[in-house]
Image 1 (cartoon, rainbow, N blue to C red):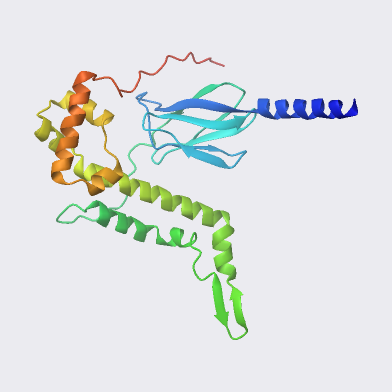
Image 2 (tube, rainbow, N blue to C red):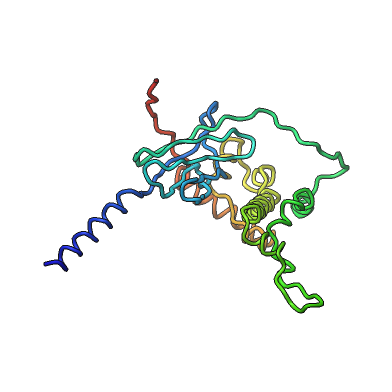
Amino acid sequence: MRFFSLLLLLYCIALTATAQTNTVKGFVVDKDSKLRLAKVYIYNASKDEGIYNTPKGEFSINAAVGDTLYAVLQGYAVDTLIHNGQKAVYFQLKSLGINLREVSITGRKYTPKESHANTLKEYKYALDKGKAKDLLNLGLGGAGLGIDAIYNLLSRDGKNARHLQKILERDYHEAIIDYRFTPDYVKKVLQLGDYEMEDFMQQYRPTYQFVLTASDYAFVVYLRNSYASYKRNPAAFRLQPLPKIKVEEF
C-alpha cells in the first residue's frame, strides 16, 4: 500500500511539473506598420534560454507561468511580457528611428566576404572574450591552465561573445544569399513585374549552401523551376495575414 502511495505521489509531482511549463507560440510585428519581423531573438530570462523566430515572424518557446520573455532586434526597443499561462502571445517592437552609424565612403561596394571581415574587425574586442585559446600555458614551473582562457570559456561575457559570433555568421550567410538572389537578376531571368517579383522572392528564397555551390546555370534552373511551382500555387508559402487581436485597455 505504501508503495502505491509513493507512485501516486510521484505521478502527481510529474503532472504538476508538466503543467507549470508549456510551449508558448506567438509572433512579432512592427508596432507602427504591423508587418511581421524576422531575426528577432526571443529570450526567457527565467530559464536563461533563447531562440530566433522564423522568417514568417513566428516563434515557439518553453515557458512557465510567471516567466519573463524578451523580444530583441537591432534597431528596435526591447519588448517584454510576463507569461500568465496563455498559449499564444505576440510582441510589438517599436522602431528606434533612424540609427546611423559612421561609414566610410569608397569607390565600390563591398562584397559579403569583405563586409564580414570588416564587421569582425569592428567587434574584435568583444569576440576575443569568447575565445578559448591559450587554455594551456607553459612556464618555468611546468604546464598549467590559463586563468584568462578559463574565464573567457565559462563567463557570461564569453557566452555572449560566442552568441555574437553566431549572429555575425548568420548575417554573413544572409548577405551571401542577397548578393546573388537580387531583384534585378530575378526580374531579368523570369521577366516579372515588381509585385510578382517581390511575392516570388519572399516565398522561394534559396538556402545559403545552394547559393554558395550552385553554378550560374544551376541557379537559373532553380529560379525557373521555383517559378513554375509558384505559378501553380502563388500562395503556397505566402505569409498568412495577421490575426485581429483585441487589446484590452486598462
